[in-house]
Length: 217
Ligand code: DX5
Ligand code: ZN
Image (cartoon, rainbow, N blue to C red; front, side):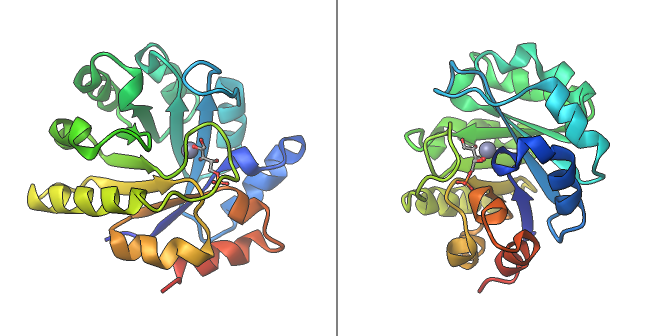
């Protein structure tokens, strides 16, 4: 299993976005997590294509784009053009999930599906072969700095069994309330990728916080 940290740029200082991006570029984190919010799917608005493109110019890291928007299929191509390496869409946000996932892969990038805390794993069980990644939300999407929801760990374990049982290479990512205090437990439960916003950018030494999560037991 992989051990990847994906710092969430939602917690970066947008006045110094290039500096914060270059800081993560120098870190042991392999990915950068980009949270796109539309004020409809979630009660918050973050940023869109130009900001993603600006981040992409400052880093060679894998760009993990989390779309918290309705009708994501309308915008997938533009996120790919702006530099996304992976586009994750919400199962709750689209009418035809298999078609949307296929259209992401057709652009030559990786496809992910995400589920909110109230959405069960069985809702996405059938589309696992179409996904490079499943993102389990461990907070209600919309804001950084919320408290981790422990029930999400059971979903990770269930997904691990399903993915391994089908012999798939789909990665499991978790997002919300992740810190050095729970990183070891999350990797142990079957996560491959940990998203961390406030615990990285709010740390006295963000690069050290990333190392702590990578090496957590
Ligand atoms: C929330 C976003 C998260 C957020 C995580 O909707 O999807 O990626 O940035 O922030 P923390 O790590 O602070 O919980
Ligand atoms: Zn996210």
